[in-house]
Amino acid sequence: MNLVARLPRYAQLIRVDTLDKQVGTLLLLWPTMWALWLAAGGMPPLHLVAIFAFGSFLMHSAGCIINDYADRDIDKHVERTRLRPLASGTATPREALWLVLTLLFLACLLLLALNNRLVFWLALGALALTASYPFTKRFLPLPQAYLGVAYGFGIPMAYAAVRNAVPAEAWVLLLGNLFWVIAFDTEYAMVDRADDLKLGHVRSSAITFGRYEVRAVMTCYAAAFALVAAVGLWVGRGWVFLAGLAVAAAAAAYIYTLIRGRERDGCWRAFVANNWVGVAIFIGLALDFVARG
Image (cartoon, rainbow, N blue to C red):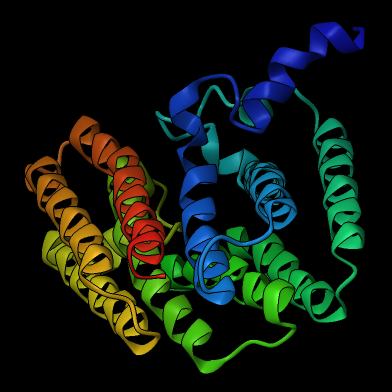
């Protein structure tokens, strides 16, 4: 089979076959953009925005393939994932590995363009977390927390790219983002919980939290917003930034209405709606810099 005929399966592997599957890239992108604006004290250089935006797409795509490779024998037993290329056999593990290497090569080119040693070492840490995350679902009761660290590594990388240092505020922002990731990835896990319980050897926060999962999700949102607000006020942001956070909190309240019934479709829609949480915080932060300088 020629390359053109393989492209649809590769599109599935990196989640570009449908637009809603790219929400993962956006959930990785928004915290990185928050960090870039905070680190730069306003609009960062455009080349950094472009590098980190493209880098978010590449790393999310690579992470999806690594996850599918690790879970290929599990996904075939899960309703939502049974038709994924590796689970269904329409793509081979060897093809997946070559595609991952291609994506990582492109990511390395972006790192070379930054020419920053600190960013390089942080990127290696991010890669190690991304590659190891799928295997934590076998033994960690809260693999979503591990994912939260991996998803948040764009934050210290953004600070390092702008300042060549990672101040304390960056780590607090990463912690806030970690709680947000636990919230939205628990919603994601709620979609597959019935299948995961049948398998018996897959762990997730949706299983660990049990009947308290909705309460846990909303508590994580509260912790995330509190920590992001603390960072913003710490660095002198004002009411426009707080207004953006208020809109994000309203989006979280809407998400509550989607997950309280614990239905698959509602939980999936809740996960996708988290894009608007990230957007609201970013717009509030960017406009605050414009309004207050």
